[in-house]
Amino acid sequence: MIIILIGAPGSGKGTQSAVLCRRFGFTHLSTGDILRAEIAGKTAIGLKAAEYVNNGKLVPDHIVTEMVAMKLEDPKGGRYLFDGFPRNLEQAQTLSGALAKQSASIDLVLFLELSHDEAMRRLTSRRLCGACGEVFNVMTRPSKKEGACDKCGGALVQREDDSEATARKRLMVYEDLTRPLVSFYKAEQVLHEVDAGRAPEAVTENLAEIIQPLLAARQ
Ligand code: AMP
Image 1 (cartoon, helix red, strand yellow):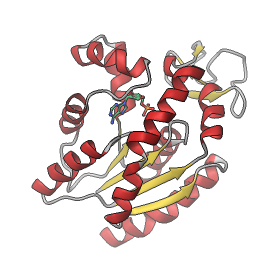
Image 2 (tube, rainbow, N blue to C red):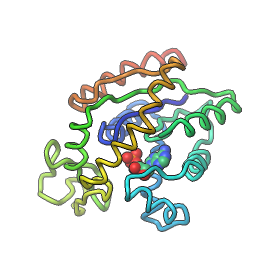
Image 3 (cartoon, rainbow, N blue to C red):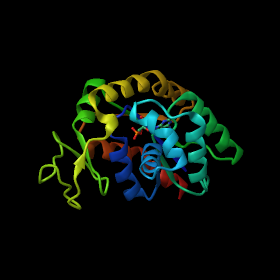
Image 4 (cartoon, helix red, strand yellow):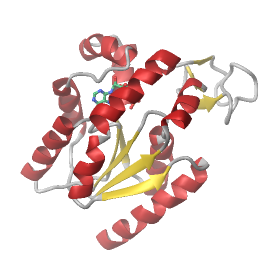
């Protein structure tokens, strides 16, 4: 089973993925998380990707699609939640082709709709723990002690690409390259649109309502 989350940077894909994976036992496949880990580990992929990620640009398709192929062991039997992939039409077509070869297909595409103004507000106020990765927000989810993680006490940092200038660039890249996927998946009749401007719990319940019938039909 393959479910894809699409949405602007800041629309809550990472937050919602974490909750849905816990609740439904999906394997979380976040290309952003994988790339950040590669960059932190200074691997060959990380060294190539850093310049793109830190400047708000998309990493070249061949790097990302290869990375995904390595993680996708059992597209038919497994339950995968893709977060941040595909990010453009080329990636979407590559994914569909690769799945078709294994007689698998995309079951659901969940589109988290959010205004760019709200996305900017969320991105520039986001902080994360440098040690464990827990996500906070100085406006909506501040840590109990300023600058320190509630979970492990690690120092909170701002993602380099969450600076105002880079966040703006990422939203432009999203509009130009990723947003066209909405029409692409609408035409494939797998797209569901969800209002991501609400509280995270309300968005989760909405997403769960869409996912549950699919899981029930598979049992
Ligand atoms: P995210 O955490 O999903 O916001 O991704 C952070 C950054 O990682 C993006 O701004 C891109 O530079 C890179 N990235 C993540 N996913 C992809 C992808 N599917 N294709 C190309 N670049 C990606």
